[in-house]
Amino acid sequence: AQSVTQLGSHVSVSEGALVLLRCNYSSSVPPYLFWYVQYPNQGLQLLLKYTTGATLVKGINGFEAEFKKSETSFHLTKPSAHMSDAAEYFCAVSVGFGNEKLTFGTGTRLTIIP
Amino acid sequence: GAVVSQHPSRVICKSGTSVKIECRSLDFQATTMFWYRQFPKQSLMLMATSNEGSKATYEQGVEKDKFLINHASLTLSTLTVTSAHPEDSSFYICSASGGPMGYGYTFGSGTRLTVV
Image (tube, rainbow over all chains, first blue to last red; front, side, top):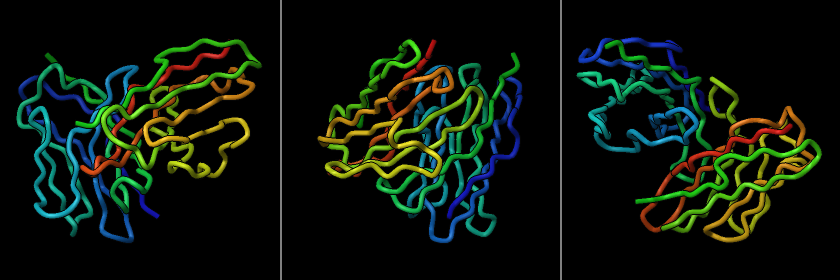
């Protein structure tokens, strides 16, 4: 079985500062890893995903994440926070791409301080 | 890109009635669809997985007679909440995967169900 741990249910950063959202996973097989963003009363939007290949993954809106197998981590970063980044962020893991269920972390609420 | 449409976005129903939520993949054939439930300020809880033409596989603790899932075509899955009660009030979200481009886990915009 796979699982995801998101450290920090709430993260606050100043506008223009680095955003770092932490995600650690557990999986008995090579994982597929995802980061999603959710705005209030909306569905989930994919920010980026790791399937195979390059371990540094670039996504939308300036976000990126690095798959580190030795640390079982997939932390999400953005060099400079924008007010529009304020939202809930979910890390997720799956053992197969598309036909296997996604297991989500508990989410991190990102607040941007003006 | 992959687009999943979920309808309705909001619904209010009386206790004891049934509500149907639709999830459509607009530009790809969804061989697998997932239904999630999300409580306020919490993560997503998988309710069931459905493959086109097959019975849905429900997660442990989810009442399959209460939450009826149908995936009769490659572009449409429905979730029917039968005999709804206030405790069924929640945010329900679908996700679809499939198509020749290998689209994975495209989410609908969610349905806010309120049972009064």
